[in-house]
Length: 614
Image (cartoon, rainbow, N blue to C red; front, side, top):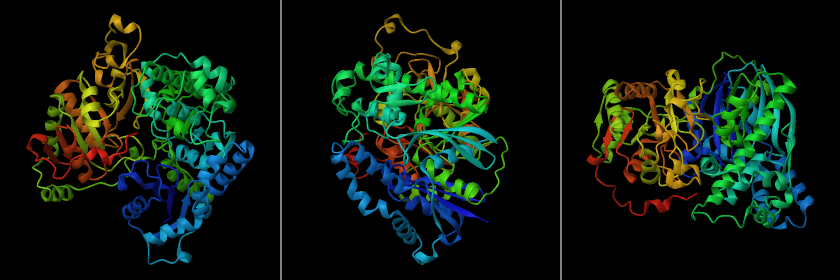
């Protein structure tokens, strides 16, 4: 029996993954345990969970594998400074203390952190510590768990060690690098520059830009191509670094960028204007064009009919949907934890398949197990907690539970839903979700403003029974990880009022756009999660019960958290979030709580100050 631990840490979204004989046993992000969003620290809680889930200790590990090579990253930092010197002195000086204190000596730091988890061990007794390459870890996380025996693999992110875009050929248990685009030319950093410029937080606000894009017009596309991005027909590109500041300063964009795009960056938390909407639409269209050109080139170069994707850009589900619809591939598969957290999965699988040369068997089904790889909680544990906090609840058997919750949803109630294993990756997939009725015209505003405490324009995703997806959306493929956007079927759309033909604005949020308005974006699209009985039977049965009551097998599904907080992990996290918002119902496995029956939390004033607004 071979146990391998993969670790991603020290940048953002640190995580751990345990594999056993090539099978993923457990994976989790550190933020879910520490309650610190995008926690970059060593994932000690996530490692401890993986060890517990696997029933092992550190002594039982064959390897511990880190997801990138810090010394190569340091080389890039030094070379970047030398190229731009003396302009980069400020950012160089800011970065040096962390590198000199910790990152240059990462092997010792990792050993120290691991020993802290197993204090009975000496450093000499630790399993071998291996270091992967950042983009190889991404590529491995995309290909090895995929359902394909042979696929071309595309990785696009901000930057790894040097690579920002890389292409690979996966076949059997091997991954062969094809080509890469090096730093500072990065589609991920270009998108992050516009994230910063539109007033959102880099490395967490990019999905807000994607959600804002349908409200704008592509007015700045020509300016992007004329000034900042040289895009070739094959999808390769170069950035004009005169417009960016991330190599030499402490911000993403510089003064020349301001001149081209109409002034200084929007101040965070200030009012959104039409300019930000148009900027979002423009960079989104440019990003989609790059993604389409690169993937078409990969197909023509290799002749391979299947595509796998990872890296932060692979979370751009609008671009993914266009690749599926307009690209040449028979199928695409995207790692659900496509960002740095997923590097822990890829690092561990690389050690198993490449370092140890172990074979890979494909069955046509992906090996991420629906991404339900985190902790779970029993009814006994939940009842013990609810009794401790004196929270009134009702314990229902499954048949009564699904029927009752379906009725509550049909009546317009908002339901917090915790069941089974926690999801790995940034999306809630029916394990730690907030649910609502997709038919409700007010549900988007209610859930944004009264539940999530976030910007009212932010769209929500539909969960739909896999066998019914094509009845509602122009798509008939699996999308279990909420990483594909597709148009709503024409027959379900409602005509847009005449006054909407001009400037699109946030005041149009409550105008119905289809018979499932709560999950239909302004451009008649939706970010779809298909629900499968094999991977999440309880969520599937809830959708079946809702369909029996309403005729609609579609629910609003958003992550179980408020703005600035990680997705909940434990029943205690879920109860606290339920009590602090205007959620109506909380379901913890088979325990059901109604807000009207609860007493207020004690000593819980000004709780929102705990959360960093992003």
